Length: 419
Image (cartoon, rainbow, N blue to C red):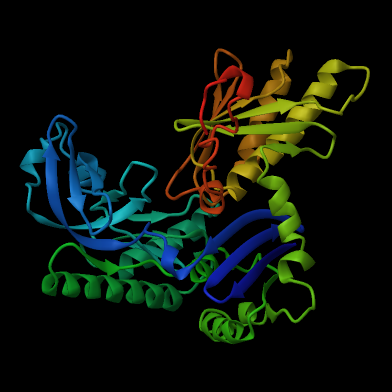
């Protein structure tokens, strides 16, 4: 059973995704904190650094955005030269440049930007300059993939590119063309605004969190969407009805006395999942530590004593931990490099099964996640695409006493220290 639970109050919107009543994704947004990923700007090149093959572009934010040479070259592989030109041959300081944000600013780093534009719709991702067609690999039927590719070739113009999304399986040509025309119109509006505007200026912004989740996650595999705001609920029903009458019927207004997040155990599960120490059902536990460069997860048997066979006990704990780790990465939206210190296993078969279990769990994640493999030290290396700040960063602030270390000086160690 899959559910989407939406809480709206004043300017705050929070969206939770549940699978068999287990919290798997959580998003929060205030109007002042609109995400930048997907936004299109007319920017102005500030610095060009040939030694780094990169440029810094002013798009109107506090910090200049970072543009790498690969994001300036053509999006289609066949058009990329075998020897990359110097970035100074492609852009110059003071030049106005149309760009799209691919990564939010993090810490001291500015946003990452590209000239490979993409506008996601319900069934199609439109890439105005890509000049190729792709079909989601999750669509297994070769016949269906071929049908969808034929439709894509019919509706696109020379030079345009698009990707058919998984949810487009079995959709009609009319539905796909209607979706495509909306995105093409949005892009033409961007170009018209760019011609009339100076730089830096925002030209296009991705929809809010609720609209994005409905667009990307509210499919026929979701049993119900529950929202506690009657006004926004009615607006949502009317909007979804344009896509599917059946899906519109799965939207329900919550009128219970309890807070909707309490009634569906969202708060309870979120509180547990955001801790440094996360307990497993068996009695084992995980410890998550984040650094500037990567996230480290340690697996422990804890209270779980298992059977008389130590290897079986270790494997059971590691297998359960693999499922929970995949859920936590997805829920907390942790990106970048992740190293997992599973409990040592002597059996190669067990090691392979744990890796396979991770890969299987990652298939549920809409963000690209890979189990790279075991390092020489026996650690599992994982990578997960990082586009925006994690849930940890958005929900917690660094302690002004310990500065984020989790430790404060012991008085006897610094007797003359002034606070």
